[in-house]
Image 1: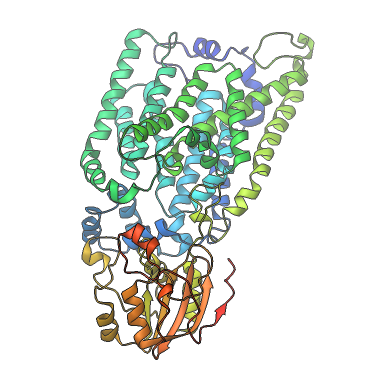
Image 2: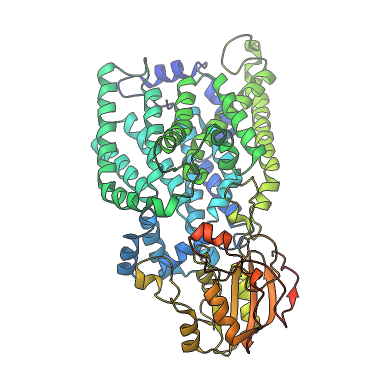
Length: 608
């Protein structure tokens, strides 16, 4: 599959047979990308990726999953392991890394996201190396730049989660597999096996990528590429390496499997439509996905058919495996971000397509064909062909990359908006609002006094990590006491803090002069500050406090309450149907009605 030969074959003969090129063809390719240092193209792709990831990296507000990362990373190692026994075991490796990272470098928004940025930059460098091995220097350089320009690379490079680590590990594992096949040694297979173990440690679903590696290997060891005994030896070594890499993950898989209903039961079972929309969601851009597919398919018309088949297998077979398992089983794992690790293969294919386009443009300018067949320029024209063709090839590459960058600009901007990280199925728009945790914290910071209390009163506020979000954006500062807090997450060996059972007793015990009431509102702006508040909590608050001001921010309604009873609300303000269906309780007051006396309903706060 790679341009390098399988052991036992002569390099020159293998290269000519696999490429179908005349011996002078690689010279024209080197004229554009091969003259510099071998590290130049990987470094350029990595730096571009890092620059794009750093661009407005603090624009999107930390969202629920990132807040879970921060929550977990702030615990001691024993507390973290205790939590992983109950929730998020599949993310435990990443949480442990972030525990050490934040201890060393802090927990600012950009700092929390920097590991993912660096991982994506490293992935871009690996993509260059993969493309170079399979299709040559020009294809490798183009592939790395295509990867850097994908909107989803910046999107998940700016997220404090493990998806960047998964992409990097899969790309590194593919490189290590290629090296082991080129020169099978125990050390090289051991390195590949270690990469497989880390791949599963970062995310168990990413082990579906091993099916892609198997497809890659079949294409690499096709007929005519190696002797039968050599192929059998490599396949056995591959199987042993995979077994050695996955065996240590068995305990993790067992624990995580027991948590799957609690954590991912919300993921819908995929259908054929899920496959149709997957590539736009992987690329985080419809137009860029189309360009990616066209360039990848264009690579099929070139001479490196086996290499193209191998990388299509690496891109598509993991998707097929996860889709089939999600269809057949009782749990769905089919989520675009879980399959983000297939993007390096797509980028390699796109780079091959761009290189082929450049070759053909250069050959047409020189009077020949890019595949070395058909009419060619007269022999007397050879001395001037390369100088003429090289700028043409470079221009073709530049134009292709510019088009990929241009059609993704709108999505790149959208993905840096404050609420972008809640857009799970981007480029499709979410039907509910995002929660502006920073906006809530800003309101509290501007008006709070020592001794204030805060109530996160929505029945589902723990699902939205409201308390964690406000705590994060007020970390290191004065912040109100959570007066309804019962057992904390670390005390419960869980992510979430549970509210106390008796709201009235907890309010009496805390006895704050003022209370900040925070209610999650995902659609519209409620007229009633108590909409969505548990009935018992609303009753306890009304008995001792009245609302003096209410402000809407995206995804939430924040009210400041002071001592003094609130007149009772009409009974029709407490329609509990929605929450009863969702949570199995009628102890809620989610309806809307007249604003409480003294409330000032300000316009919804615009996103920053």
